Amino acid sequence: MRPFTYSRATSVADAAKSAASVQGARFIAGGTNLLDLMKLQIETPTHLIDVNHLGLDRIEKTADGGLKIGALVRNTDLAADRTVRSDYAVLSRALLAGASGQLRNKATTAGNLLQRTRCPYFYDTRMPCNKRRPGSGCGAMQGMSRSLAILGVSDACIAQHPSDMAVAMRLLDAQVDTMGADGTARSIPIADFHRLPGDTPHVETALQSGEIITSVTLPKSIGGTHVYRKVRDRASYAFALVSVAAVFDAKGGTRFAFGGIGAKPWRTEAADAAAKSGAKAVAQAALNGARTTHHNDFKQALVERTLASIYRQKEARA
Amino acid sequence: MSSDHVTRRGLLRGSAALAAAAPGLSHAQPASPVKEGSPMTPVELTVNGREVHLQLDPRTSLLDALREHLHLTGTKKGCDHGQCGACTVMVEGRRINSCLTLAVMHDGEKVTTIEGLGTAEKLHPMQKAFIVHDGYQCGYCTPGQICSAVAVLEEIEAGIPSHVTHDLDRVTMSDEELRERMSGNICRCAAYPNIIAAMNDVAAGGKA
Ligand SMILES: Cc1cc2nc3c(=O)[nH]c(=O)nc-3n(C[C@H](O)[C@H](O)[C@H](O)COP(=O)(O)OP(=O)(O)OC[C@H]3O[C@@H](n4cnc5c(N)ncnc54)[C@H](O)[C@@H]3O)c2cc1C
Ligand code: SF4
Ligand code: FES
Ligand code: FES
Image (spheres, rainbow over the protein chains, first blue to last red):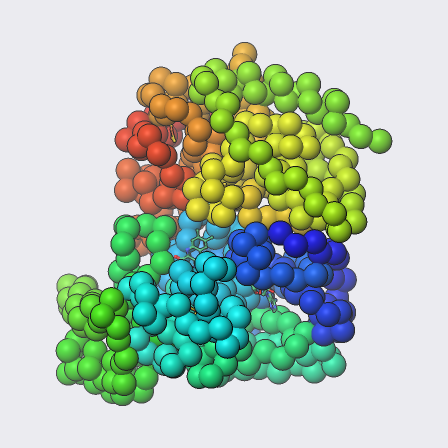
């Protein structure tokens, strides 16, 4: 690990201001992604701002019936929250499908959204990677790309977004609430939060320099039947090859979001619109524009089969 | 004032308890040597009920602070990347991977390691159950397994759901639940069935 200095932020505004003014500064929350990457010198911050003691660890109902989730709420606590279990079960399910009990006890809402790709070439500092070292090329495209994305990819990068939680957040139309270095607060719709790689795969989100996530807000619950189905190489403690989040709401509407296949948590209106026509039609709509490699082409069939299994599960419950 | 000395004694007693549970543990990996450049930072922890004051390079993981500075070598370093669970300890009553967190981030907090769960004279019920059920072979993963196992039973008791919980509001004890909740602790010797048996034993027998 490269040397760094460490400080505990005393207020949200302070944290944002010093993150923007101190060169090489980064926030640290659970540390489960950042420290992993720092040990490998993929991330090399010179100053860490600890945001764990700012009181951002609460879950509150909003005036319009939604839920405001503090940026520092641990994944374990969010999954176990009574309101989340009953009104946003797909979020509980997605969280519980991720990582391990120990990691979920540390991992936070903001850190989870911001976790970086699991592309093996991003992790191998001897290999070219446009995300890690802009302009160096992409090791994955001609390499082992089995786990990588098939939607939203570019000529520069085909990395997948690894988060389970973010897929449920995308499905539920969450808003990411932030404070900028100048003290201004804003809310970013989750659909606009993660960026597609394009020519700049190292730019991953809409966050500006110093901007700190304060909370993630969910709109009023849409009720219905919530499902999160994750397909992976092991039954537990593995990242998704494909995951599907679905809500069949009380009024007959259905929505889907997908993990493991997109450069960001994936959702399309066309897939939701095809819901009545079944798994094959939804898969076709969702996978429109897919760009696969020899290694990850199997994900297309896997998406359809995962959807089929969700439909069966839903019918069995009805 | 450094309390390294005081802590060390407590620790040696603790390691004896560990040795009883898992004979022949000695293949610890050395921590990376402290490099120049980071100013030392004071860190105060309560480890196994004992207050310790340390001066640490901010890069020091909680795991290295325990092993290299407090000589509490019961907690093991397997992968150092959050992937194996060998470094599992309890911080403020919750299990975490001590390799993926900085000691400075826990200034003022309470840490419980395998040495704090039981002693050679008075083993924790889970330590006893691991011995009775042969919940290990080489023993390297065992301290992490035991810390996790103790925490898992508490989590089920507290009604915290898992990936395999059918009804999120009704958490029950089952082998399926125990296996899922222990998936963050890898055992190269594949002692898994015996670990589940040990956990079931403790769960059934209460705190015997
Ligand atoms: C072995 C292993 C297996 C895993 N398996 C899964 C899995 O199956 N599914 C899954 O979804 N995830 C998985 N994860 C990833 C895990 O979910 C993430 O590491 C975790 O969610 C990151 O949260 P954190 O709080 O620890 O983030 P940190 O490591 O603290 O931070 C991550 C990033 O977010 C930034 N940041 C943190 N807080 C803020 C804030 N408030 N405002 C602005 N920026 C902020 C940091 O600067 C950093 O860049 C796994 C991780 C490991 C190590
Ligand atoms: S896919 Fe993206 S992250 Fe992976 S090597 Fe290519 S540029 Fe890097
Ligand atoms: S050493 Fe911490 S998880 Fe492997
Ligand atoms: S007992 Fe050998 S690794 Fe688990």
